[in-house]
Image (tube, rainbow, N blue to C red; front, side, top):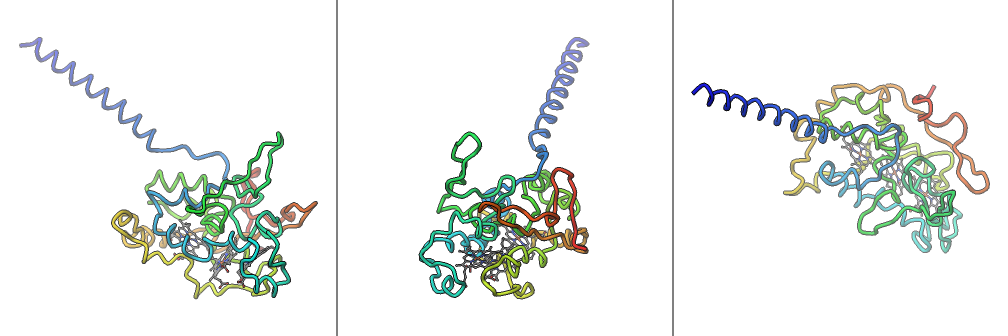
Length: 272
Ligand code: HEC
Ligand code: HEC
Ligand code: HEC
């Protein structure tokens, strides 16, 4: 009898340890490590299990189609009016890419056809016409200072239950109205239309894009957006700086003192 009890306790104790270790391993698997530096990951990475309705809405919005405008023959009349050449291919032109693609000249950002690394290897961004990504004005152009690689992990690890400040420290920006001026009404904008009406614009009208497969991603209905709205981000009170740039030998270089974030110093810069 005593022996049976001993055996049973031994089994129970081993089971307890095994489960314990497995649980730890699972927890490690679930909680991903935050990358050391911010970089652009592309809109496709925000899609899938997390933001499918936002992605679908974006694909069908003007911002999901900005790269096509740089192709010859597209919006010929508008180009003529803006003194641009309607027959020219602008898809690799640095004068256009900062405002028509995602993260151009920043870590992980869009690289046009013909881009090569130091060893001469082709590093240009692959474009899948079925799946708009970094070649358009993606999520990260409005939602980040230097790409979403880091705060995306925080969002995943917390299953979307985070405060604004938890992601802001990794470069998620909340100064939405200000961020539009990265392009609309920017001094380098050649179209002369001025600022966009932020109050009227609905950048990703998600309501139409819910279906059976993504119904569980309704962060408005499940209250996460509302809970988060009660928290406060620094960039809501103080707008982040907006980049300006110059062209040196045809390449875009950010003008000194205009970047909103330095990854070297891990520091954010706000407008004065
Ligand atoms: C500073 C940002 C910026 C730069 C640089 C820029 N664009 Fe744009 N582009 C925009 C914005 C923003 C719009 C939407 C219209 C607006 O409000 O200015 C736009 C709209 C357009 C349109 C549609 C215009 C219409 O009226 O239908 C075309 C075509 C276009 N851009 C081509 C280009 C080309 C080609 C270049 C490079 C020579 C370029 N853009 C450079 C920001 C920019
Ligand atoms: C042109 C700028 C712009 C682009 C591009 C953009 N967004 Fe947004 N996003 C906004 C603005 C502005 C808001 C706040 C108003 C609203 O909800 O419409 C917002 C809100 C959100 C929210 C709610 C956040 C919260 O907690 O309140 C999510 C989630 C989101 N966007 C995801 C995305 C995803 C995913 C993409 C890309 C597929 C994307 N956005 C592309 C501007 C943008
Ligand atoms: C990285 C550059 C960029 C940023 C940032 C950006 N946009 Fe745009 N936006 C564009 C471009 C390029 C177009 C042109 C699309 C077209 O004409 O088909 C555009 C088009 C639009 C349009 C439709 C055309 C128009 O001129 O009325 C609206 C509305 C708009 N943007 C609103 C916003 C708002 C609101 C924000 C900020 C929350 C924002 N955009 C941020 C680049 C940008």
